[in-house]
View (cartoon, rainbow, N blue to C red):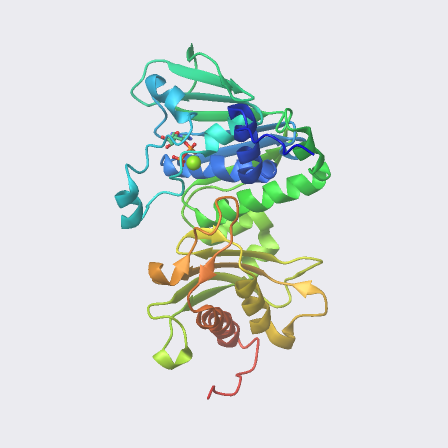
Length: 350
Ligand code: ADP
Ligand code: MG
């Protein structure tokens, strides 16, 4: 048998394969677009999706906008306004994005329109990308800020499209992401709409409990207990300068089937099994079987203790001293419950 010839893939194929790695489902697109809006200093972010985001996604903000002459760069590969070089990166990034690949990647596997008008521009402009083909930049009438529309996600990658779940499942993922950012940014008015119906809208008045009210309703908002915790001594095992703040629900305000935990590390929305377990552990025997609490928890640790850069698509996080962070979160939730006499004091450690 003849050995097969090795050939370099064409650019389009490379682009689509790469896109499939970053954009897993509608919720991953929504995450990237919201992060761009927040990076742009938006005070309002309106998300609306059709059919769980599988047919259409629109994110509109009132941020700084993109000047017409930069629209093409905005959808180009490795193009970002957020860092200049590797030294900027090592100095630490203050923005949520920095890789300059989200719009490029989404444009490769959908029909993407970016329409924008900076506050000082008289008219706006828009550019459309279809399956990686970038169209011409045209003038467009629009309010200040940026609107990004993503239609027919994965229309040109049928294998990827097949992996999408039911509309309700895809919408659940979208809802979780938008909720996560809404709770992390109570000073931004975040809204979500599905097939023309409003799911929730926060006020953007800076108050976390008011954001919880908008997202989870009055009963939950009123039951939330304040968490504000710092280790009293090194012995508690937490990394130095750890702080845990936020809200957790009364042990009787729960839901079945799944938990509603939003956890943030250094203001980044993350999922971490260790944090989830720590919260549930803190409630101990107070939860009825198969009942789960609500929690919105912000964990601050020194930046060098945590690696959030595990994978662009994922919200995972790794800690240098995971056991310490876990213990900190458990103690923080425990002390909130203790303060309200909702659990009994556990035996002192050591
Ligand atoms: P990154 O966020 O990593 O820079 P993106 O592909 O997400 O890469 O965006 C590319 C660039 O487009 C950003 O650096 C920013 O300059 C601009 N941009 C994208 N979305 C917005 C927005 N909503 N408002 C203002 N500028 C935006
Ligand atoms: Mg981005």
